[in-house]
Image 1 (cartoon, rainbow over the protein chains, first blue to last red):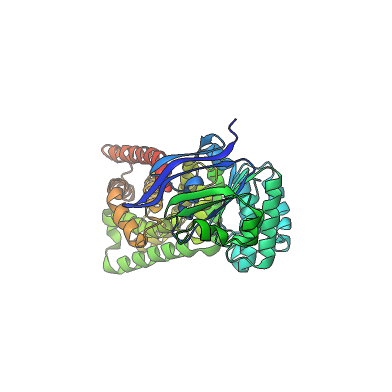
Image 2: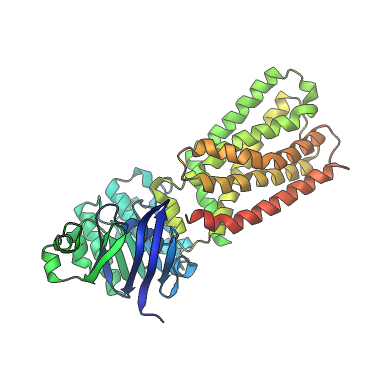
Length: 235
Length: 222
């Protein structure tokens, strides 16, 4: 079995004639937490969408735990939290989680749904429709939706954006638990401090090109902008 | 197949809670039937034009239901959550098609009695054949509509594009359904040359269901 959780080889993505990703090659080992950094438009979301099987690469290959990137086997092991929360407003919190529990083939989706509602502190509103929730509650429900099948690989696109302090702490705790359990995390973010607390590695994308990947050092943790100063466009 | 019914149940539950497309489709079909009952003041001749009128109403009302099928997944990027899950594309498509079929069936069930009363038409003379015709033609409309709903979901003008793309594709289904319904309303039943239309409906359903199932993954992953 391959040691790499993710293997991205020479991936290009074109939107029309514009190359959003240019020959991106990157490997992510099992248990690694990679913070993917870059300015707006650098290609972070595009790359995450390709890794999640939501978009096809124009050229290049992606493998997830040795399987083809968009295969059912790869998707079963992956949890995705993108810009949208992926929650149905007309369904209740419990119905939303049960739906995804069934889709991910959990043995007891009802029990898993209630357990996760308790973990994200939404058990008291389990039978309320998601449309009635505050933004923070919806975000917590989205986190439960992405984590319910205890994925081996988590792909998170700016997961800390628009979260309040309580939700950030919850997400960090859940991510730390998954990392302790041996899961792999790839997250794109602009909120460097929150991300770097968890990250074991970082990678920087500039205009669709991967310019650097390295392990996170204490230096970066104390001054996250160090990355941009040393490797960014203005360096 | 379990996933198919999970998706169908999810769509039906969402729609029956909001009733946003089914109310519009049912109301639209009522209004058209009532207006035509004034314009075509020839109640006794429903057997001449009834088939055409009914299926035009179903086709236009159906577009209102079908437009929402994949558009429903757009809020909160729910489609991304489904596509990133291990749910096979064909399960998602079939689940949505079954939900749309049920919703169109409800619209037809509401519209048929009103049509019968307003146009003095006995649509229950051949109940089994009426059911078969409605089921085959509605499935044909559903398959094409669901497929194009997936294709147009990311277009800004999808409400406009869906009918433009779907109606030309539906011409064979509508022709067959109109011919069969006219024969049934006329009291002749399905006999002789009418079998061609039955075969056309069956063939259309098989071909376009197979094509849709084969192509849906390509459509969902851009």
